[in-house]
Length: 433
Image 1 (tube, helix red, strand yellow):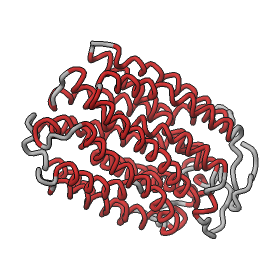
Image 2 (cartoon, helix red, strand yellow; image 1 turned 180 degrees about the vertical axis):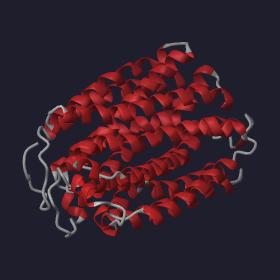
Image 3 (cartoon, helix red, strand yellow; image 1 turned 60 degrees about the vertical axis):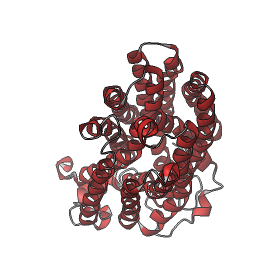
Image 4 (cartoon, helix red, strand yellow; image 1 turned 45 degrees about the horizontal axis):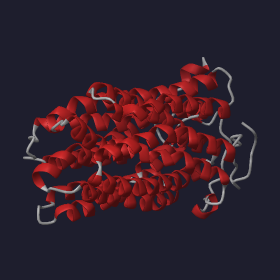
């Protein structure tokens, strides 16, 4: 009887997170899909210059993760998330105004602004999930909204060849589309979102269910600086170093397929779609798996870490992506690794809401995201210069690192945080999980 009183408005909120994350990744992945075309036919960048463009985004993303995480915790998800997407919509449109005379510098400036705005997406999403879902559903909810990353990355290679030619004609239209979608989302979010405890459409049964496995929190803010010295913050940050691998697939994957198998824009569409569909399945699978373990009675610590171990093993075969002359074997290896990464990511994000008070989640996610972005900047700087000298060697070492990094990071995370003890409002251990 009590079960029938639990409404499902939280899933509507989750649908908005999924939509925003999809748009977010459409914006991010445009440059990766267009890169071989723009590099060869329009702007004639070197690999090092393309590396500078991606580094500009990652540098801004690193700064933005720290700033936006704190802003979202301070202003709340409704206002903070709106601010984030308005910034990224404006700078997404700015890409379409870059001319040949501006060259790679024009793109770097536009990518920098985009990175500042887009850095708010995941802190806002994780905070929203913590506010709207009980712990036993958070990994699944995170996996679902995180699947938007792959949907967005899948839609771009599917849509772009419909109006962008292999010689780059009409490339500016790509950014008109994402700007329009972002504007629509802002309107929907502003009309729909409130916290569950003050939302008119949330019934008492659903609110009690959301709070069923969480400790009641005070309204007092936790300063950003307070979470910085906490060891659990850095356990999460270490796990987020693997973001550099995902960014590598997103920004350099099409260049690898172009250089290795001579694929042009239209030829890249199906391989990239396959990779990101596999990533999509991985995101949902990873969230479902750890949630299933918890429902079977496993402790949260065991459920999350065993799932992360499974993900690490699934990812390892990508080491051999450069060792085959069959493009489809290479595509499937990258797709398997991308799926493993997204399953990993869904559970890593959930670690934050498992351990930290809800009002600190955006700040912690921001710190972790900054570390992941910083690792990406270093990796892309090195990769761009190595590729200009030796494409074969550069991609071999890139995939070698991509396949082995997860097990190393998981070991370090376990050493730092062997037990996932929830923290109270004072960031002290509230009880053992």
